[in-house]
Every structure is written in structure tokens, then in C-alpha cells.
Amino acid sequence: MKNLQAFGLGAITALGMTAMSMLPAAAAWEPTKPVEFIVPAGTGGGADQMARTLQGIIAKHDLMSSPLVVINKSGGAGGEGFLDVKGSKANPHKIIISLSNLFTTPLATGIPFNWKDMTPVAMLALDEFVLWVNAQEPYKTAQEYVAAIKAAPDGTFKMGGTGSKSEDQIITVALQKAIGKKITYIPYKGGGEVAVQLVGGHINSSVNNPIEAVSQWRGDKLRPLCVFDDKTLPYTDKILGDASWSSIPTCKSAGLDVEYLMLRGIFMPPGVSEEQVAYFVDLFKKVRETPEWKQLMKDGAFNQSFMAGDEFKAWLDQTETKHKGLMQEAGFIAGN
Image (cartoon, rainbow, N blue to C red; front, side, top):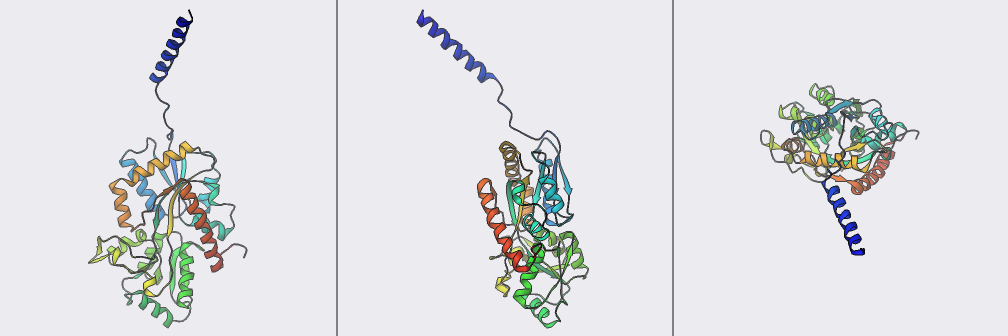
């Protein structure tokens, strides 16, 4: 009888396990409605162009069942966008693409925001900065540009950039220090507008990202003088004549000891689940495998670093500390 009971219990258990194995696996989380894709910058700039390229890639390759809707919130040097995401607790249907204004905007404005108020998803890439001038100007090299600034009265040369007390102005202050002459900084809403102003001759130079000025370079309207990295760019495809991104010397080699790279990363609101974060990490890994993304990386001469999880958080901590030092040196900390 005992053996029969044992057999009966075992048979019931086995049948139960078989029945459970036949049940469909619980579906992984995915968006159930349109996802807002916040851009904390104006239209036409590097962040906006990247966000819209991502939107197009995801739609073309059917990587999401819900649409991605790009929304620009550039007010307060991007603070409008960051505060929106900070205030959208536990909402997985909202993501934001970040620039280094993730660090500079709260330091410069004093707004109640820190990158830790959001949930880090992934670093998509790092963006380069290039010193650009109008192609009609006589200086062909960074050395000639510096000589022209030194020969002119203080403040004569105008540098256009995106936002006040932002990455572009931090680089401008560092250039002033390296050259020993004042450069007048003029802020605009986005990198697209900066490029238009430089083509029109309303400013003398800019420190736009590659993607923000490549079309004007290709059209022989703008000229790159140097890149603010410690090494030349690896991309050898021709842009204008025989010139490629790899043709541009480093600013350091031209005697300007200034280096700066900018984050292009994705964040979500606070309070989202690990499963929801994992969905977007996986989504952007798929995006990185598409030919369109690889072309964007080439066209924009990006540093293709990718990070997620603890590695990304550690990088954010270190980079926040670096920006505090740069902002203090430039005198850009709010209330100081």
C-alpha cells in the first residue's frame, strides 16, 4: 500500500510538472504604448540628430512593437527635459538621450537635479568636438587661427556654441586659457543653428560635434582645424576631396592642450524595474548592429564606446567629478 501511495504521489507530481512545462513562458516586459524619447536640446543638434536616427532605425527594422516619439525639451540648457524624466517616476514609457549637460546644467543653474535622479540605461557612444571655421577664412590650420586671435584685440573673435555654461563654453574657456586671449562666446539653442551662423559669417568659429557640421564641410562651407581628443579619428572615408575625419590633427598637436569628449547615453525615469531597463539595453544593442547605426558612427566620427550596468554607473561617477572641476575652474558653478 505504501508503495502504491508513493507511486501515486510521484505520478501526480510528475503529471503536475509536465502540465506546468506545457504552460507558455511568462512574456518579458515590453512597451505597451508609445515611448516618449526626450531630447534635452534643440532641433538640428547632435543629440537631436542621433535621437531621430535611432527613431528611424527602430521603426525600419521593427525593433519595437510601440512607436518611439521624439520630443525636444531644451529649456534651461536641457534642464526642462531632465526634470520631466526625474518627475516621471516608474514610467517605463519615457527615455531620454543625454549629453554632458547631464552634469553641466545642474552645476550651472542650481536646478534640483542630478544624474542619480534617473535610471542609467546605456552609453551609446562618446561624441567628439572639432574646432570649425568658415571655409572662406584665410587660416587653414589651428596655428594660423590662434595667430589671428593673438593679433586681434581681446574679444574680437566670436565662438558660437550650444547653450551657456555648457560643454561648448567650457572648451572655449579652456581655449582662452591656452591662447592667452579673450574669445567672445555666443550661445545658441542647438548645434544646427551654430553651424548656420558660422556659414553666414556671424561668428568666427565653433566647437561643434562632427555630425553637426559634416554636411557644411562636405559642401565646402566650413573647415575643420583640429579635434579635441588625444588621438586622431579612425575614419578614413573621404568627406571633401582627399580629406577625411582621420586627416584632422589633434588640437594638442597644434599647441592647444585641450581635450574633451561628450556622452551620448540613454536614461529612464527613477523607479523603473530591472526588467524594463534590460529591455532598452537589449534594444540599443540591436540598434548597434544595424547598417544605419554603423553609417551614423562613420558620418559623425563617433568614439564607439558602449557601457551598461555598473560599468556605466562608475563612468558617470568619475565624469561627474571631472565636470565639477572643469566648471569650478571656469567659474560656472551656480552661486559661486
